[in-house]
Image 1 (spheres, rainbow, N blue to C red):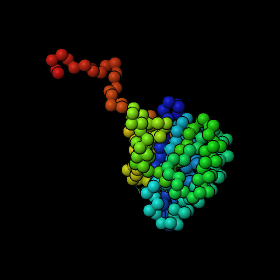
Image 2: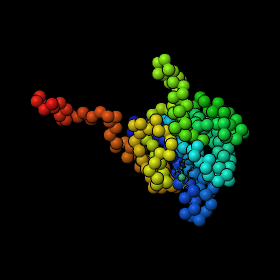
Image 3: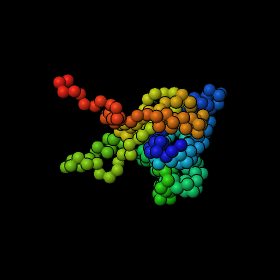
Image 4: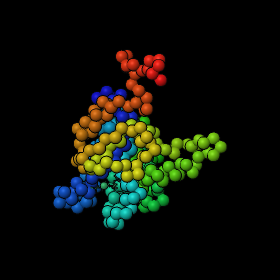
Length: 235
Ligand code: IPE
Ligand code: IPE
Ligand code: MG
């Protein structure tokens, strides 16, 4: 697939882990384990395809509403996954950043995140962002609070690059407070497949569909034979 055809920034709402497991008669945590494995495959595939930014929604600020056992399990999974993946990220030139609030995360995980971000900071092949305790509304509130009242500028880079393609697995068609600002002109793709079952072939099909989209950004597609100007008298 030619590099120009893949999105520069792909964002994924990795949904359907729990249902994937319960439909097979398994516990929800098993879905999260398989989901973590899929996330690894997806990132590797994106790096090979030439995607330069991948942002994964791993835990929303609303996910604190879940049972304590599930939340605890997810944080344990982030910890062990981060540990195991660090060497691979370094080997493939992948820079890792975690977005979202850190003040409610376990202290050991916060330290581990800071170390992984620092160690992978020089990676230039792909910038992987994982959203943990993330709320887009909160991120925007925070950014707006820092607007320079004098000239209206946002200091630094509080928000992410524009999303080219937003994919949500799991069958729901909503954004669940993810990258609301950055998705202003994102192409949207919704798959009924649960995230743990997402294959690289599914991802290629989503990329192929994306490549066929006509992104106009409010403009018009001017082709050689298109009549753009109205004749005098028609106004
Ligand atoms: C997404 O899968 C993972 C997280 C939100 C942590 P879910 O856990 O939401 O799975 P479903 O939607 O209940 O199937
Ligand atoms: C969104 O999925 C959050 C993540 C995938 C991490 P949810 O399962 O929490 O979203 P809702 O509750 O269906 O909107
Ligand atoms: Mg869900």
